[in-house]
Length: 271
Image 1: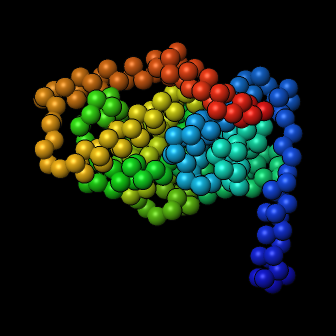
Image 2: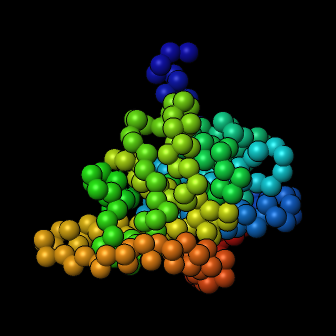
């Protein structure tokens, strides 16, 4: 088969995928896995709602309980507002599907996620975004500045990783892990943002605060040089407050409210 034939066959496969019916997995997987699927699908829909998606690119993943080291990942050919609990693909540590699936996966896109999942037992969920504001702050030499309360709440838990090109080299994983350490949020220099959490909700609340902080910073810096800086010592106080406050919000307050919002936007995500 020549190159033209390969391209034609690939296009035919993609056209066929457009009409794929997605059978429900509810009752066919454990109750624990189904809940994770619903939470992760809700996160994809909410990311799309807030305009933080990047077409079909970037990923959110969650660890499936069990000794197999399996994870749930979005199908590579669905927009975030199309993702459902049943369409999420179960993959191994290399990002390859462990069950038959009609969907395309992107093993290369799982490089960053697999690095974090493998190194941190508490990193059950990983979110990685490419928003303009997140990329802009990631490209700024000073990174995230303590200009707003939002930034100060997450800044003490923020790590940095230098850009090495598109993350397809598995050797980069050990450097990502070393740079992240025990922190729960990261600016991937010249690239984007990342958060981790023991739950999908926890990772989502962290990425929400990080993205809001990045957006506010770009707006503040674009307004001119007359910026009010917080009193000495207050960024450190806010960082301590944020460490426990964000976890509490994720577990009992904001994430349950966000789930209700996802159902109001389109309950189909939970099918």
